[in-house]
Length: 303
Length: 264
Image 1 (cartoon, chains in turn blue, cyan):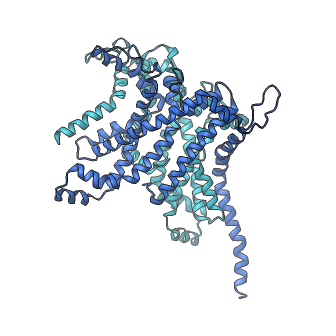
Image 2 (cartoon, chains in turn cyan, yellow):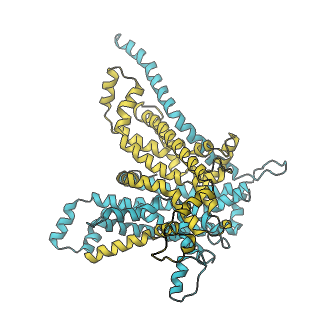
Image 3 (cartoon, one colour):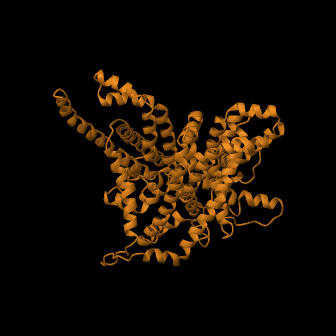
């Protein structure tokens, strides 16, 4: 017993100094996280229940008033609705396209790498650059889409200038950018499927579509889930193309949530309203993330 | 089968069309921009004109400095944080890790409102450091490196400690080299993310001296300029060229990185 005591006495401070060392190493990263993620999230929540400080009047507690005011704000409701529509339309399209792309480039195909690059490169480019590329198509006088219509003697359309079409034009751009990105994940998953399965299916005489329905698709389920969740989180953070292509117009028909927050905060300087909207956005993102952690942690699919 | 391959090829060509159109417009004289005639003369003049029409040189320097600063700091901070999480058996490491992972759902770009105030209070508005600061700690980098470090056998480290190696020596000679693929993967993803970032730099900058490429390009191609497709096409390609080059140089790593780094 007596021989053990000194070692305990020595290892205690050593234990604590190791702990301290560890905390010191983690401190810089944690400090930045606290300053730019946790603090602003909490501060936003706090500010969303206060009125704006004006002309020397301090901000006062107003409870849920800012949130109730949002319900009366047609543009907010419109943006929220647009954003939902955006998610509901672009996500299935992008995911379906990305699966088709992955199946296409997973074949023995001459120039495979080029085809892959053609699909993937759009997801590398800055959204601002992509917006410019697509303006070539959409612009009323010189745009390629209208030239195409003119070939068939159809009247020109003001693609981004009509409330009925502006949002859908933005959706096309998003789908174009995201599909190639999701393709990568499907491709990785397809390549992990044991080749013996396809050999066996060929020997049994199963058709390619039967093999896809009964073997590939079920095995791709975790990837689909993963892609769906990432796509949903991205769909609520979309803003660059709105600023670059339509500025929310015409008549707010293409305004999305983050864009409207940006405008409320930095054009109208209505901070309480912007804070309340940010909280709504954070709740949406957090709910998606919770689904993500619950579903994905069970079948870690990070490789 | 032949037919299907042809269809795939055509689909890929169609998918790439927006970029090809921009290229076509950029390398032909402005007068020819609508004709799409095969025999239109080629020119690089649009690139020269675009370069002189806006301070693109400055923008390039700003974006490059910004990206290098962010990626280097991210990797350094994430390395030591991940190492601490894996090897120091801290009492509260579980809670700390959960706090870190929160950033995966609430990214700094959503919190522009208060980050704008914070950067203002620090007196860093309209500076490159001000753009970079909110991104210095990356939960994603910490997450990836923690996973990589965890798979490194503890015996390696114990052997080194017995030999009298210091913690930092061990980190430099064992952990970082073994996690090299993760570093490459994260760096590529982070470079492309920050090269493309737009909303936050837009909000926090207002002078040419610190404006990055994306914001510069947006100002350049804003409708008030009058529609000069040849110039806009050239400028658009110019700004994306470094990423495209990077992609063609590291094509395999790029695709693998994005696979690995899927969770962002």
